[in-house]
Structures are given as structure tokens and as C-alpha cells.
Length: 172
Image (cartoon, rainbow, N blue to C red; front, side, top):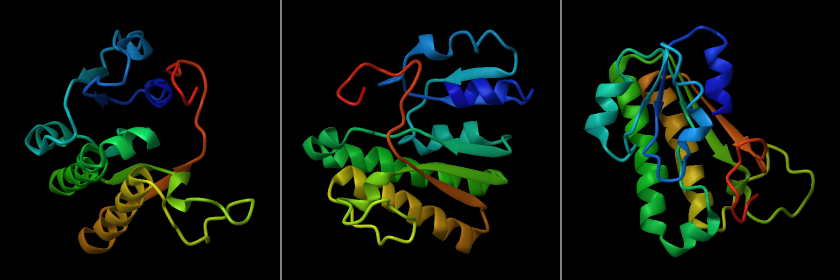
């Protein structure tokens, strides 16, 4: 919601894709009153729907994911379908639609247990959960889509994101 809020200040057209399985309409409701912001309830695992929606957008900021390490351990197949296949769907649709930039939200979980602190980008990834593996796979797919298809991508490895409008759960 904070990314959408910032983009709405830039006077650009914004499409929010969310299946609302973990999101809250109250986080973006105030933004949906603007003509240039629309919410599309779509699951990123549905390639045909993604392909239709991505068409016409200049950039994709991919923040959708199963974000719970414990959930990824309980259901690694669902985590893979959402985080890996969903990312692949967005990348493929972006290439087919001529998107000019793809931003991917990765995670510090790709590093696993840190042997040294602070963690630097040159540390070799060693994920220890299905979640970490799924985020690393997404990063690798981004690199491949840059090299093979020429889609400019950037991967951001977030550490402990928190703040206003945060869902109250075990990560809060």
C-alpha cells in the first residue's frame, strides 16, 4: 500500500493485482478513490489473467508472495506455486507485453543462517526454508529474463519490513 501511495503522488496509472488472501482492502481503499488507481483481484498463479492485465503497463513492481517461513514449511507446494510460478507468470507476461522495467521483492531469507554480520550482498545464498528457496528462484528467473529476453529487472532483498498498516501476526 505504501508503494502504491507513493506512485499515486507521481500521477501515473496504477493497477494493483492482489488476490486479497492476505491483503486488506482498508490499506488501499483511500487510494482507490483516485481515477488512476484500480484494484484487480487476480491470483498471480493464473497466467491468462496476468497476461491480460499486464498489457499496457510500463513497469511491474512484484511484491506478491507467500511471506511466512512457517507457512512455507507447512505447505511448500503452495509456496512454490505462488512465489516461483507466480513470479515466472509475471515475468513472461511482462516480456510478452513489452514492459520496460521489472522490480522484484526478494528477501534476506535467501542467505539462510548468517555466519558473519553484517550480511553483505556478496555472501553466497544458502536458503534453509522453502520460502528462502522460492525467493532465490525468483531472483534467478529475473536474471535469466534479463539475459535471455532483455527485460530489465532489479531484485531488492528486504530485511524485516515493518510499519504502518502492518498485519498483526507472528512477524509484527
